[in-house]
Structure formats: structure tokens, C-alpha cells
Image (tube, rainbow, N blue to C red):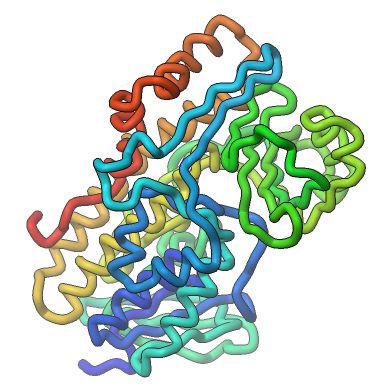
Length: 401
């Protein structure tokens, strides 16, 4: 049976758009459906680990993404209680990998880069303001119906990819579980412009404290000092709409009252944190990817890293199935391997990162946990071994499974 599109991708975030682009580059007709009227740019992920950059290069996006953001190598842990600063970096990977650096770029900015490339393909389209209401499938394909202004409209395809975020409608309609837990605290991700360079701060800093813990990372070079992402944690019982009223206390505690008073808050996004995975990443002709498949707290930047690796694996495996080069058993392998990578590796590491950064009230345990980073600061072979962890989150070629 011929459909208007071979693949429907739900969600116009980076994972969904990258998947659509990779499929379109193989000549596959694809439609992206997004419930929002345009790209969203709330503060979310900003760091793309070195291990994901090869995939962006394969898609022809790395040069554009780098031009929109910047590359960096440095990291530091700063311990509020003791004043200790532990510096290390990706220079330990020099000569060992092709791209020994991370890319810093706002998630929305990356999505814009991908969208511009996707719009060049006649076999791809993005349908905005399309809120999914229902999904039906049989052995031949999938039918997707919509709510709101597009109620009554139905799109049919051979395959559907649900990349529509942690609150995924695709996952909910298919009644797939979202196993795991929700952290009791609230995270607040902010984009800020500091009034000075705060000399000595790494471009990615983990500020260790059980009250004022924070992730502080540079986003771009805009203005005199650039834009920074400042992410901290607070009691989830506090009103979300008064987050801006409480921010100065956090900034003042970390940087001093003068810096806090002169800091411009460009955007703030409070949200709940999860460690969850869908019960299955495949349901017949529907596949899940990105936050629709798994959700993690952001400490260590593993959420979108997993989403990118999901996308790269789907581009290969679903592309091969859609073009008749592989049996759909490869998609079951995709679902199993990607779920295992999250449950067995990414989620435990992100949980460990969060506990060190934000729950460090035991000085003895904190000192033990920091010893690994102290060793990384002077032992480059050991540092390279630790930094290679994110590469293990990538699935091998599924066409050989």
C-alpha cells in the first residue's frame, strides 16, 4: 500500500527532527507532526558530548551547529564547603578520538539548525499545531488522528516514531508504561547573563553543595560575557510562579550579592525530574525515541545524549527497513538495546551525578566520590578512560545484530 508518507515522526525537538532528516536523506518520505505552533526554546539541554559529534557530522550538521554554538574542553568541580576546585578536561582525549571536545549549543538552537536542513528536502515536511489524538495500527501501517484545529484529519504511514517528549502522547495512547521514579525536588533551568567574567570559572562547572548545588555552563558568546545556563534545585512544594523571586538568593550565595544584583535572567524553566523508561521502545509499527522513551535528571548532560544516540540508531535501522534492506526484526533490536543503554548505564550514572552534586551533606562520602575527579585532573590516561563512558551509550550498528 502507498501512503503519502512512509514515516510519521511525532515531535519537532532535536531527536525528532534529526530522525526525520536522516530518513529524508535516504529518500524516505517523512512527515513531522508537532503540537506546538513553532519551535520551542525553553531552557533545556545545552551540552553535546564529544561522542555524539560524529553522528552530527555524518548528517552534515556539525559545521553549522558549531558555528551556532562553540566547542570546549574544560570542566571543574567546585566544592562550596571546602573551597576546593578540581579542574579537568577533554584534552585527555587528544590523539585518541577524532573530536576531543564538547559542543555547547542551546537545544532550541540545534533544532533550528536541523530544521533549516530538513526544509531542503521535498520528501519531508513539518506540520505545526498538530496535536495527536489517536493511533491505530495493523500489520500494514499506522493511522494517526488529531485533535484541536486539525480534528478529523488522519495521516497514514508505514511507521510512526514517537519523539514527543517525556509527556509523550504517543506513549500514553499506546498505554505503554513509564517505569521508574520522580525525584521529590524541582529543578530550575535558567539562562542568565552575568555582569562580569567571574574569573576562574570553567565553562562547565559543577557546584557541589546540598543547598546551593548548581550546574553552570556557558551557552553562547552573545553580548560582552555570553549567556550561561544556571541550573539549581529547590523544594517542589514552593510555588513555581514565584521562582524569579527566589533566584537572587541562590545567585548571591554562589557569586556574592553584587553579581547577583546585576545578573540578567533571560529565561527560567522550572520542571520535575524523573528516572523513567518506557516499558518497551517498540509497539508494533510504533517506535519511541528521546524523552518519550526515557527521562533522566540533567546532571551530566545524559538526557539529550541518549536522544541523539536513539536518533542515530533509528536512522540506520528504520531507514534500512523502510527501504527494504533489512527485516523489521532490527527494530526490535533497536528497542531492546536502546532501553538497556538507558536503564543499565545512563540512568544510574545520572542518578549518581545528582547525588554528588546536590546531596553532599556527608563530607566523608563526598570526599570519596570526588577522588575520581581529583585523579582525572592529573592522570590523563585515567581521565580518558572515564570520559569514554558516554561513547558506551551509543549502540553498535544494528544491521549486524
